Image (tube, rainbow, N blue to C red; front, side, top):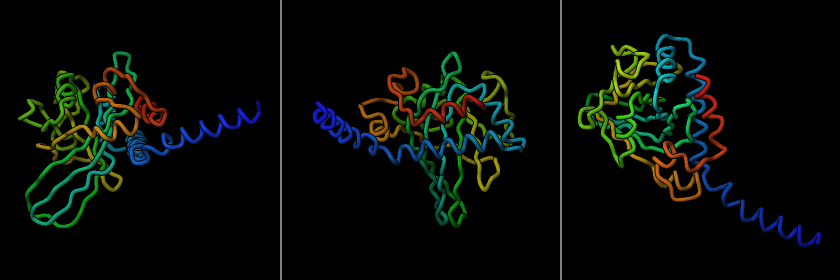
Length: 224
């Protein structure tokens, strides 16, 4: 009987090991997003305060822990982030993974790394993000504003932009130009993180899956 129990335990551990190691990159992205939320919570400048107020009244947030911008003359920027939405009781969903990319043109040399938060204020904007691919701005029918660059941080969802954008670079929160950026689901990462075929809508709207590795991120957003 004891031998049977030991054999069962070994079999279980062998079966569980691939699952535990299946999503290191995805968990790292979630943990880095958690760090961004904690920095947002602790930051003392006016833009951070406006950002927290917007998050408290948002429909969803997309957190990109590392948006890399680099190049000479022609530049490109991009990164992978996590999308979480709130339900009617203000509970945050588990994260769906998204890629954010944007092109730019100008005289630029070097590489800049920013932490970017897109604060989604309207149901229309969240539904647009749920599409396979959405280009921010006019083409998507969404009003995009940058916190700290002439955009007033409204505390209601019907008085301002559909999406507000804020960036943190070198410890300071400020504006970042993201108009025209392309958002698209990172489907393979969703499957790796949840261990089954699942869509972004299943994760953040229908909430058919969960991962305990995201519990701290969900809790931190709830404390904003």
